[in-house]
Image 1: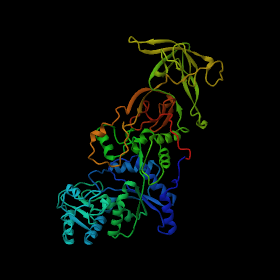
Image 2: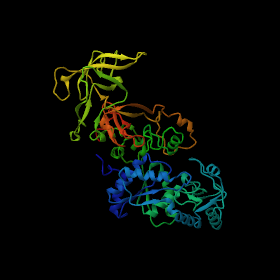
Image 3: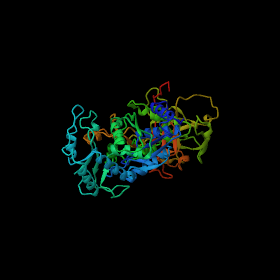
Image 4: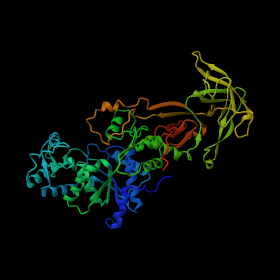
Length: 562
């Protein structure tokens, strides 16, 4: 089931008290992604938390693009984010861009300068970094920290007018270089960037930093509960400082919750972009990617993802969730609504020598044995069929119950067949096997004459639909649960060395004729293989491409108290 509310959590308790005390009249949250990449599985939790909590209390959620860095942002990312949010089943009350508030942000920066709370610094980025101090040592004041209000106003005006080059000057908040919180040591709030912005064009050449812009955006939009992940906790004092010192009317408050880390999934946008740029994947929506669009293309459903984040819960704790739990929820979601059909991924031809010549016989097959309401279908059966190559062995080990010379197995939905002859090519490879069938053993007739220990699946050769199957393993070999934006000093080569060369294997086989017209995002359970999704980019009518979503079985179990 898909949950319409969040589980008990500390944010829900805070909102309940805020409404009860009259601190807020209406709950307003926001989902504020930066449009510098595609959304990933971690964002799914942030989306769900913001939209679901607001909805629980009769409030609303805005979608806001924190587009304060024109060097990394693009309208492509804006459009993809809108699509992903809607696909997950959420709709925003209002759509905003941080860039819509650039003039207001500039004016608030002027307020800070006039109050002696901001100054123009001529130091380079490296010099600012060197004088910032450490976690145990205070920072050092900039030699430009005591510029007069008049000089700072003049320089800031000229920065806006485009008189200076990139990196030549910045505007810094004047807070406390001796603060134990390194984020309060005169952070940069404006930098120069002569670049075209996707929304404002060339109207601006100075841009606010995220930590300065974000609280102002919340205040302008009347956000009551600014919900973000735990890595922003150290930024909250500056968030509150900006709200207080810029003298905005509204006073939103920031609350932090533990982010969603999934073992083996990399969610650093920088690293994901590297995979795209290096051609290691075929785009942000590659089914191996942890992006929402990648998960959608692979075959995950909004319901499975939302149930997954519900189970992960909302708390301050920073933890890692096994990917097996995500896979559990897609199995649970699909087991009652995905048709169960047959596909042969590595075909070996079988000739049933005593089966009558002529047109195929039509056999009845249930579409989903756990959901009778899905009805049944008819599948053709004739003298020549394909089976899986690994369902036959010429010299099998003990306790091998599938097909081998002299052994009898059941064909799923059909008859017993017995292997009588093996046909090989000049190199000794098995290319065909000849069998006989017992017409008394037809499925559904109640035959009880004898038992066989093996059941194998098959595809009628005369009606088989050639298909491509894409089989996936984890993209990253090593366990990667790094912070969202890892320091860029980490060598890219180290990350690229962790790429699993076997993350994608493409095979060609056949599916039942009823799947010839399968549409993008149609989902099926292939007998013994797993759940598959029709690829949305490469699949063509009559030549389908299927992506493996997840295998059929797992040892994963939810905790019993759930």
